[in-house]
Image (tube, rainbow, N blue to C red; front, side):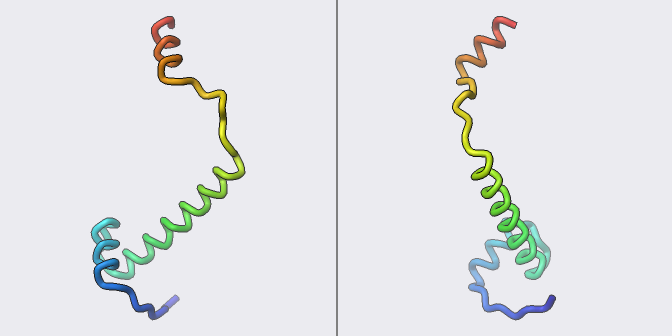
Length: 67
């Protein structure tokens, strides 16, 4: 889909540098795809919640030493 947008040159140049894109179109496409992926991951994390039963580093080290 062809769309015309006015983007700040500094922001676009930075997006090109960060994405490694060869064109402006590729940089914008990658940035939008990454944004969408992060939003999906955020919604997934919200659904899954947190886990309070995770081992600490010390507990894991003791488990590895005993094994």
